[in-house]
Length: 128
Figure (cartoon, rainbow, N blue to C red):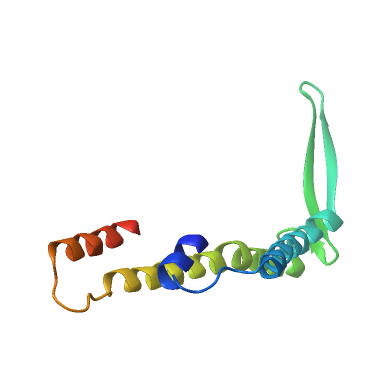
């Protein structure tokens, strides 16, 4: 959505610099790594052996203050994970799509309306 957002909302603004793009990429990778660290640190496996079916290995998290589901750390981690991976992206998409919609549907043509100008307005509204 970002290239379309910039093209529609700020069409005459210069493009993003390489330094800014690299900074955004680095922050996304660092945030992803930070979200994955607790799973890397606190994960363990357990193997169950069954007499008739062989064995089954499961991976689960063992938090310092208790098992998953009963741990305060697990609760906080799941809330942070939800906010960072779901709530923030959904809110940013809602804001940007609303902004683009307001720009496209709120644009006014200066002067008299010709058939060609009305066609341009309709085509702009179909972009979103």
